[in-house]
Amino acid sequence: MASHSSSVRGGPGLGITGMILGIVVMLTIVEAATTGYTEDELAGTILLSLAAVIFSGFALSGNRSGKGMAISGLVMGILGLIDTFMALV
Image 1 (cartoon, rainbow, N blue to C red):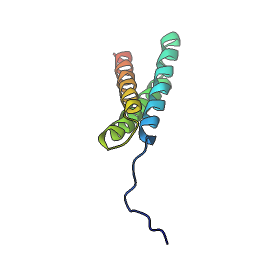
Image 2: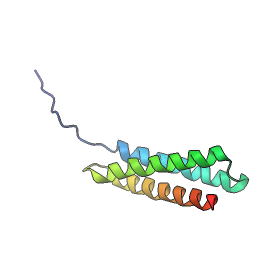
Image 3: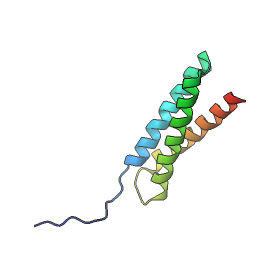
């Protein structure tokens, strides 16, 4: 009978998730640059940016693979937050 370890090894899933969310944020910013932000787009971009930063931060904090993708997700998430806060001003 095979026993399973209670600790789960981290894969690149969190890094990939952070990167994909960051890409979606960048696409939203490009679209908003041409048409301007609506209130819904502004709220959505803030939430997606926060999610990208959180997932990427968790991926970077652990001993996981996919750190390059996590860094790119973190950078894009931070850029999304900066852009949305600049749009509010």
